[in-house]
Image (cartoon, rainbow, N blue to C red; front, side, top):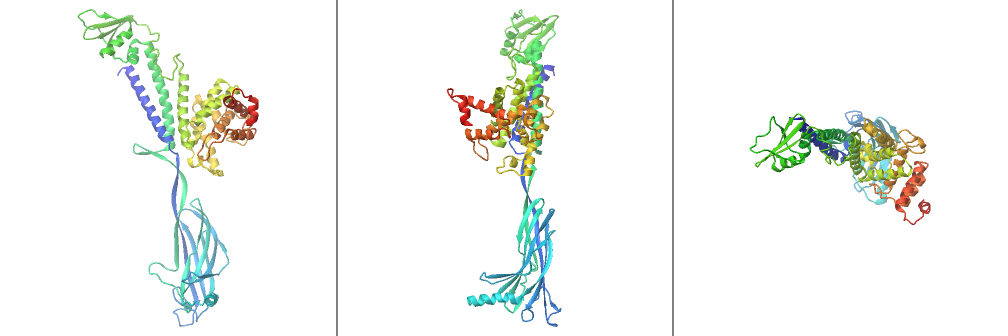
Amino acid sequence: MEQHETIRDWMLVFAAFLVLAILLGIVAFTRPAFIQVKTPIPYQHTTHFAYTARAPEGLYDLPQVQPGEPIFTQLTGTLTVSCTYRFTAEAPYQVKGTYQLLARVSDSTGWKRTLPLTDRKDFDNGIFQDEAVVHLENLQAFINELQTATGIHSNAYTLSIIAHVESQGEVGGEPFRETVEPALHFRWDGKALVVPQNSEDSPFIIEQSNTLLSMSMQPNSLMILGQKIPVSAARMASVAAGLLSLLLLVWAWREAEHRAQTSLTEYLRLVEGVTVIAVQEPPAAEAPPTPLKSLDDIASLAKTYRRPVLYLGEGEQCHFWVQTPETVYQYTTVKAPLANPAKGWRLPFIRQSQPDTTENILALFDVALSGWAQAVDMQIVNDPLHSQRVADLAQKIGKVMGVSEETMHSLKQASWMHALGLMDIPAEIVQKRTPLNEKEQQILQEHVHRLNARFATADQLRNALRIAYYRSERWDGSGYPEGLSGEDIPLGSRILVVADAWDALRHDRPHRKAWPPDAARRFLRQKAGQWFDPAVVDALFRVLDDGESPPEEDENESVADTA
């Protein structure tokens, strides 16, 4: 394969990779990097009950009534109930709380009376064991009061021994709090207490199972060619592949452009798009070739008749022929480099005055940063033009404050970059409508470090990155990441934060509507000297007054009124 064909093919390869990187970026940047996953954590309260009572010798198999045997009230007026409780879970846990043993007598109408058997006690490690004595005459007194007051006599009551347990703590790292009341039930007809037996479950072992949902943030992933790729990795891959493809495409384009400017054959191949074939001798023809005046004429004939251009170099001369059915056309010139045969043949964003490659790369960085900023703004605040408006406003403020052209350009790039670090922060934190807790604030503040790590190796963006990195510092030193204050904060950062705050206040956000201009001005004026550089706030108001006030209105009066 000839060299010019290789360059052309590589340009197609680089362009294809660029398109794929853009498509991957669109998919990756429109999906959250982290998703909230609900993981069930099973846990269980297990309570063992037992009871004993005095019994006359020889009436039962053992000297005391055993669990499951009836208790005759004519033989004893008390029974002793024991309770063992244990909390278990499949995840690590720390559970403590309080408990109290109760006796409750009730009937089928819903009436009930409760008698404390023990005082409220604390337990730890999810376990306790206790016992209490139940005096049946006290419960019988409740029944007698009910019968006397209502005149209703019933022979069926229920005596329940209840463990009122209030537990709290952490299970699997999640806060836990729950109240349970496992109970042992007796059927009481006034003469005997009997525990109803169930063939399936033991009435003495009470198991209460439940599930706690653990809310955790896990990396989101994309399915690409049957493989799961983390969204954060897909984002980084799209950025890296996009930048590399842009740089290589510019190099290949510049190389092809250079060859087209210095070689007649390359000009025909790369600019005019015709096939050039080197020959060892002139083409055979019955009649002498028809001479042409320019190389463009040869190219036009080749494209019209869809014929290749034949080329022969002899000494200092170059001969070109196009053979048509009617005749052979010839153009002869010297082997001098072309002055600029590819004039006008350039990428749209490259100026015709042949800027150097560094300017081309910076232009590509601007195109890429602007596109990424739109994608992130759409994902975070549903406002794809936010960063572009901030860039425009920051440049206007910078012009009023007399910053250099170089700083102005860095300020524009920083405006596009300032939110890119948020793309790795969970959307639940970035878009939270209620105040962030301390842990969430720490996670959010990590975005400046993520931004710095992402672009630390891009020397062309060093100044812009410095501006974006210190954007969250405050005039009084209460900001982050380094707690800078006053003029220690770069001027570009002080300008960017004011432009960003104004644009955010003046446009709708997921958790609120846009603020009116007067309210936004009052807020910035109140925070001037605390969060914001007062001089930058004054410069912002000058920009706003120049753009918003009627021509005939006096500027000083306008500022005074709105302030």
